[in-house]
Length: 396
Image (cartoon, rainbow, N blue to C red; front, side, top):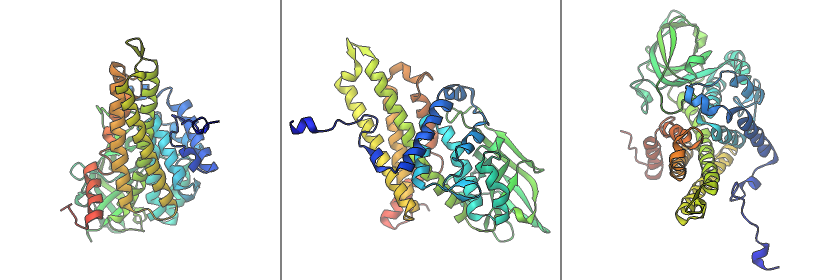
């Protein structure tokens, strides 16, 4: 047998044999989530996207699978590895960004804030129910006039006897209109420090207004939160932090999931383009046989596999306690940009069919236009990487 005959052929679905780098447990979790997406999400997600909604009953289903707050320890959380959580985000976003966002906001923002910065009483009160999907959380940081600069937030909290009173507005809040509890960050009037507060959404003075007419992330509930003299007891404040370190630590957790999730969307676009190019006949043969289409497919496969390796490396760093926020910024910047390029190229390969909801490509492409902006814009993450490289702060 010649050397060439003995050389194994690559698997288009796992070009670099990344599967071999995963543990048995990681592959098992990935396969469970992939099956959930195949059976529960993909049959209906185009309709959800078109209707601008997603069923609330997905939360208890996700809870039964152990996916909500899965990387947290105790309180009903699965205590999975960071890499397993990343693989979960990848598979969920291969279905739709909205589904990954539901899980990400619940676990990496709302639940992580309570787990990391809350009191024992707050953890026991909320985390088991949130892990089960019985209670839904949202995370109120972004404001109409405060996005990339959270330090300029106008939402404020003042003391009134033993109580806290909150006033302000938050916007672009995922899960806001269906949440049972909102983690709201506010600047305190008496010391100018930023604190987090657990706000039950049935509290007098609290309201959530759904944002309509979105052209991206349509299967996700996005809302504006209004706090009008919302009175809270003293123990509603998260006691573990009184600075922007609190919300920024939560955002870093969520961005880690995006590093993986974006590659899930890109992989779905690549798979759709490969399937379409292999069956679409023009000039007497499949368009996959033309050089220009093969060049597009090759570049798409390169970006998907390169992004997956980057995500896996960051996952291993996180599991070893070595992941820095600057690493996550490079991961989000690189993988979301790559995913956008893959989605746009796939849209071209599918031609006119690529703009319909009969294929996933345009839906992913539109969603990624939100992903490139939220949890830190590409511009901001570029400046974070630039600061790490030069030691010079370009923010101000």
